[in-house]
Structure formats: C-alpha cells, structure tokens
Length: 92
Image 1: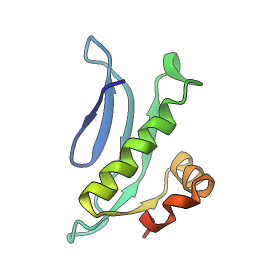
Image 2 (image 1 turned 30 degrees about the vertical axis):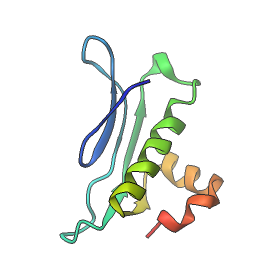
Image 3 (image 1 turned 30 degrees about the horizontal axis):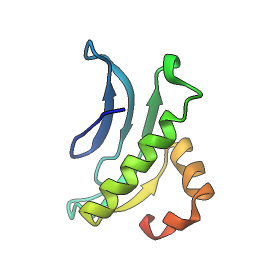
C-alpha cells in the first residue's frame, strides 16, 4: 500500500485517483507543534483489512519525524491511542 503524505493529511488513492482512505490532522495553533487528529476514513471496499491501523502507523511516523504532538478527537484515533500506550508520548 502506497500512502501519499501531505502536510496535514495522509491519503491512499486508487489507480484512478479516488480517495480510498485518509486521515486528517490540522494544526491546533500557529506554533505548528501540535495537530488535531480529527478524521479517519476507509472506503467500504477496504474495511476490515487493517487499513485504518496502517493509516495510524503512518501518522505515528509523521509525528515522530516532524517532532509533533497529537490531540486525537476522531473516535478511531482516540481508541487507537488507548490500545497503543507505547505511543502515549506523542499525545499532547
């Protein structure tokens, strides 16, 4: 799976350019040191295959690489961080 990384989102596109999965994380303030993980989406055709978890793994790498903290507000992200206490240091 080839995810496309942007400043405030990570996206998986189909071969035709349709968005199949995405996670968005806008900055919480002007300092650009913290993001709000506010949306996770996986197309019905990919559900149940662990794609949302892979999006979160990609997000974790982005946060670490960019020295960012996260405030998860999307229900999936909130639950994911609860199940992965090893990444608690990334939460604001």
